[in-house]
Length: 354
Image 1 (cartoon, rainbow, N blue to C red):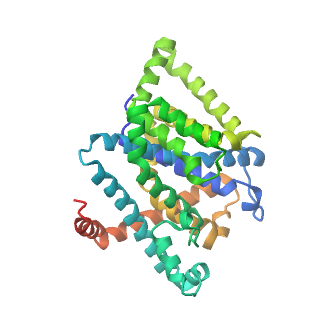
Image 2 (image 1 turned 60 degrees about the vertical axis):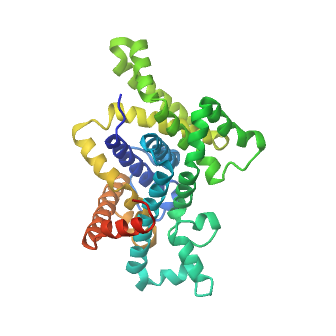
């Protein structure tokens, strides 16, 4: 089994849909004032699933670890690769950040969030670098908290990669068990999400997906595809139930590592290859970052009534996905019009990133 960059995009497409369901129906207080029909599911089942889909964060982190490990291994100038990766992340975020500020300026939200004191400018620039969560300062959109985590994970990547190279499984165990052994606060973003990153890297460096596929074919023979379909469904279901159990908070560091791994493997085998589905997921994957960075403005900040206003829970998600995808397409069009790639190229050369 070859897990390609194209497959990564498709899995990101799945992850962004997971995130939308999670954010829409995590709890009744998010949709309670609207009439929502959850057919063909029930409200209780939908809320349970939406709560479990918090793993969308772990999905993105897992895929980041996997993709970076593949690229990092191929690069001769590894420090330069990390700098470029960080630059690409931040320059695209800064563009969307400034675009959002311009579009929403007439609403007065800028002053509402950052205030009008002397420190407001500092808050603005900290948020623009994606580090508001790290410094505990105001952020324009709550879901931008992920940027701080993304920056930290990229900066830590070379050290974690080195540990995996030299210690392999021992490094995995140490990083997972150390916080438990030392009584650290597991709600800290880095401690909570480092394992999915680590596991993604480990899978890439050790060709785990191919080995799992080889093992299943050896064990199940001709019935491997059918047999492993049900085995994977069982594994994913068991991990979700464990995550949502009373002990779920305590073991979420572990489940949020193995769930993305299992979902990625299962989806690559049985979902992303479907004729129409693969095209849709690829498009969503390509636009997933833009959609992530802007969707909260639509769902909560300015157009909540519209977002929840179509009666059926899944029609809400469908319309919302189309709208936020169109916003992302618009963002990419603006980038082309202002020759964003050329601008970033010039900045990159000035920073010796070429």
